[in-house]
Length: 172
Image (cartoon, rainbow, N blue to C red):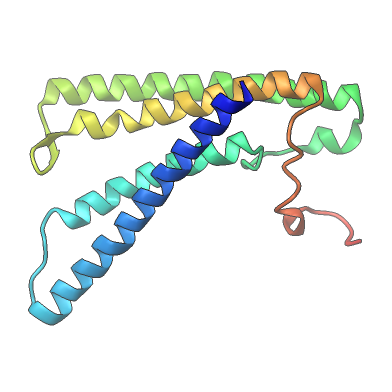
Protein backbone atom coordinates (compact mmCIF):
# COMPACT_ATOMS: atom_id res chain seq x y z
CA UNK A 1 0.00 0.00 0.00
CA UNK A 2 2.88 2.35 0.71
CA UNK A 3 4.25 1.84 -2.81
CA UNK A 4 0.86 2.75 -4.28
CA UNK A 5 0.67 5.86 -2.11
CA UNK A 6 4.20 6.88 -3.10
CA UNK A 7 3.32 6.38 -6.77
CA UNK A 8 0.19 8.50 -6.46
CA UNK A 9 2.16 11.15 -4.56
CA UNK A 10 4.65 11.18 -7.43
CA UNK A 11 1.85 11.68 -9.96
CA UNK A 12 0.38 14.55 -7.95
CA UNK A 13 3.84 16.14 -7.57
CA UNK A 14 4.36 15.82 -11.34
CA UNK A 15 0.99 17.46 -11.99
CA UNK A 16 1.87 20.31 -9.62
CA UNK A 17 5.16 20.83 -11.44
CA UNK A 18 3.53 20.76 -14.87
CA UNK A 19 0.75 23.18 -13.93
CA UNK A 20 3.12 25.54 -12.11
CA UNK A 21 5.67 25.54 -14.94
CA UNK A 22 2.87 26.11 -17.45
CA UNK A 23 1.60 29.04 -15.40
CA UNK A 24 5.05 30.65 -15.29
CA UNK A 25 5.75 30.12 -18.99
CA UNK A 26 2.33 31.29 -20.15
CA UNK A 27 2.48 34.35 -17.89
CA UNK A 28 5.93 35.25 -19.22
CA UNK A 29 4.75 34.76 -22.80
CA UNK A 30 1.71 36.95 -22.21
CA UNK A 31 3.84 39.70 -20.63
CA UNK A 32 6.28 39.55 -23.52
CA UNK A 33 3.53 39.70 -26.12
CA UNK A 34 1.80 42.62 -24.41
CA UNK A 35 4.86 44.73 -23.64
CA UNK A 36 6.95 44.09 -26.74
CA UNK A 37 4.41 43.37 -29.48
CA UNK A 38 1.28 45.17 -28.13
CA UNK A 39 -0.75 42.01 -28.51
CA UNK A 40 -1.61 38.91 -26.49
CA UNK A 41 -3.34 35.58 -26.59
CA UNK A 42 -7.00 35.84 -25.55
CA UNK A 43 -7.14 32.35 -24.08
CA UNK A 44 -4.10 32.64 -21.76
CA UNK A 45 -5.70 34.74 -19.01
CA UNK A 46 -8.76 32.49 -18.56
CA UNK A 47 -6.50 29.42 -18.68
CA UNK A 48 -4.28 30.87 -15.96
CA UNK A 49 -7.35 31.48 -13.78
CA UNK A 50 -8.33 27.82 -14.21
CA UNK A 51 -4.77 26.75 -13.43
CA UNK A 52 -5.00 28.65 -10.13
CA UNK A 53 -7.96 26.45 -9.19
CA UNK A 54 -6.07 23.31 -10.23
CA UNK A 55 -2.92 24.24 -8.32
CA UNK A 56 -4.94 25.05 -5.20
CA UNK A 57 -6.68 21.67 -5.29
CA UNK A 58 -3.44 19.81 -6.02
CA UNK A 59 -1.76 21.68 -3.16
CA UNK A 60 -4.60 20.63 -0.86
CA UNK A 61 -4.12 17.01 -1.88
CA UNK A 62 -0.38 17.21 -1.18
CA UNK A 63 -0.80 19.04 2.13
CA UNK A 64 -3.44 16.61 3.40
CA UNK A 65 -1.27 13.62 2.54
CA UNK A 66 1.55 15.07 4.65
CA UNK A 67 -0.81 16.31 7.40
CA UNK A 68 0.31 19.86 6.69
CA UNK A 69 -3.16 21.13 5.91
CA UNK A 70 -4.68 24.01 7.82
CA UNK A 71 -6.04 22.63 11.07
CA UNK A 72 -7.26 23.90 14.38
CA UNK A 73 -5.69 21.55 16.87
CA UNK A 74 -6.77 23.09 20.15
CA UNK A 75 -7.70 19.76 21.73
CA UNK A 76 -4.48 18.12 20.62
CA UNK A 77 -2.58 20.57 22.85
CA UNK A 78 -4.30 19.22 25.96
CA UNK A 79 -4.51 15.49 25.26
CA UNK A 80 -1.72 13.00 24.75
CA UNK A 81 -1.24 9.38 23.79
CA UNK A 82 -4.27 7.41 22.76
CA UNK A 83 -6.68 10.29 23.44
CA UNK A 84 -4.71 12.46 21.03
CA UNK A 85 -4.93 9.80 18.34
CA UNK A 86 -8.69 9.52 18.86
CA UNK A 87 -9.13 13.29 18.64
CA UNK A 88 -7.05 13.33 15.45
CA UNK A 89 -9.07 10.54 13.90
CA UNK A 90 -12.39 12.23 14.81
CA UNK A 91 -11.16 15.44 13.20
CA UNK A 92 -10.25 13.44 10.10
CA UNK A 93 -13.74 11.85 10.05
CA UNK A 94 -15.33 15.31 10.16
CA UNK A 95 -12.98 16.45 7.40
CA UNK A 96 -14.01 13.50 5.21
CA UNK A 97 -17.68 14.41 5.65
CA UNK A 98 -17.05 18.07 4.78
CA UNK A 99 -14.92 17.20 1.74
CA UNK A 100 -17.55 14.77 0.47
CA UNK A 101 -20.23 17.46 0.89
CA UNK A 102 -18.13 19.91 -1.14
CA UNK A 103 -17.46 17.23 -3.78
CA UNK A 104 -21.20 16.61 -4.02
CA UNK A 105 -21.86 20.33 -4.43
CA UNK A 106 -19.19 20.37 -7.15
CA UNK A 107 -20.99 17.56 -8.96
CA UNK A 108 -24.24 19.54 -8.80
CA UNK A 109 -22.42 22.55 -10.22
CA UNK A 110 -21.00 20.39 -13.04
CA UNK A 111 -24.52 19.10 -13.78
CA UNK A 112 -25.76 22.69 -14.04
CA UNK A 113 -22.85 23.56 -16.32
CA UNK A 114 -23.68 20.61 -18.59
CA UNK A 115 -27.27 21.81 -18.94
CA UNK A 116 -26.15 25.39 -19.65
CA UNK A 117 -23.89 24.36 -22.53
CA UNK A 118 -21.34 27.09 -21.68
CA UNK A 119 -17.79 26.99 -23.01
CA UNK A 120 -14.82 27.76 -20.75
CA UNK A 121 -12.08 28.51 -23.27
CA UNK A 122 -10.88 27.23 -26.61
CA UNK A 123 -14.26 25.54 -27.07
CA UNK A 124 -13.83 23.30 -24.01
CA UNK A 125 -17.15 22.78 -22.19
CA UNK A 126 -17.10 24.54 -18.82
CA UNK A 127 -18.32 21.43 -17.01
CA UNK A 128 -14.99 19.73 -17.75
CA UNK A 129 -13.14 22.49 -15.89
CA UNK A 130 -15.70 22.44 -13.06
CA UNK A 131 -15.09 18.70 -12.58
CA UNK A 132 -11.78 19.68 -10.95
CA UNK A 133 -13.74 20.68 -7.84
CA UNK A 134 -15.42 17.35 -7.08
CA UNK A 135 -12.36 15.39 -8.22
CA UNK A 136 -10.03 17.44 -6.03
CA UNK A 137 -12.21 17.29 -2.95
CA UNK A 138 -12.82 13.56 -3.44
CA UNK A 139 -9.05 13.04 -3.51
CA UNK A 140 -8.68 15.15 -0.37
CA UNK A 141 -11.47 13.13 1.31
CA UNK A 142 -9.60 9.92 0.45
CA UNK A 143 -6.46 11.38 2.02
CA UNK A 144 -8.39 12.24 5.18
CA UNK A 145 -9.94 8.74 5.23
CA UNK A 146 -6.44 7.29 5.12
CA UNK A 147 -5.45 9.69 7.90
CA UNK A 148 -8.21 8.28 10.13
CA UNK A 149 -6.54 4.88 10.16
CA UNK A 150 -3.04 6.31 10.45
CA UNK A 151 -4.14 8.37 13.46
CA UNK A 152 -5.69 5.36 15.19
CA UNK A 153 -2.58 3.29 14.52
CA UNK A 154 -0.33 6.07 15.79
CA UNK A 155 1.43 6.28 12.43
CA UNK A 156 0.09 9.63 11.22
CA UNK A 157 2.68 12.20 10.23
CA UNK A 158 3.06 14.87 12.88
CA UNK A 159 2.63 17.73 10.44
CA UNK A 160 4.93 19.72 12.70
CA UNK A 161 8.11 19.58 10.63
CA UNK A 162 7.12 22.82 8.94
CA UNK A 163 5.00 25.55 10.37
CA UNK A 164 6.22 25.56 13.96
CA UNK A 165 6.97 29.25 13.64
CA UNK A 166 3.25 29.87 13.19
CA UNK A 167 2.11 28.11 16.35
CA UNK A 168 0.87 30.19 19.22
CA UNK A 169 2.56 29.87 22.57
CA UNK A 170 5.80 30.71 24.25
CA UNK A 171 8.92 30.44 22.17
CA UNK A 172 11.39 27.77 23.20
